[in-house]
Image (cartoon, rainbow, N blue to C red):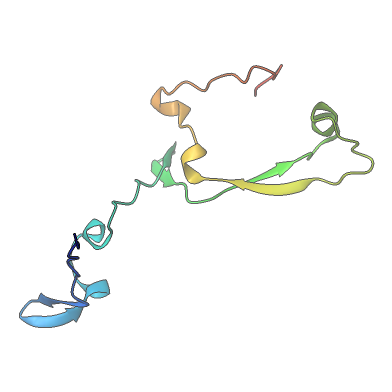
Length: 106
């Protein structure tokens, strides 16, 4: 059998006029096939801070490079990123699981 697809219009009627879908006042989630995930946020003084990007530096000090099995005299630090949902807001009572092979998590 064939499946019929319902297409969304490129414009919507807004206050009696046609407006492009991108500038309409419809909820943003209605433009997506699957609703986007909520933006993770951390508690800060005065409210919450949205987390959109997490940048990390690996081998950024001698002991860390040695702990990772590297040779800090030959291998420079490197930058990598993590997805925003990797953040854990411990101020909200969430527990941060202690990594098994880590001796000190500070």
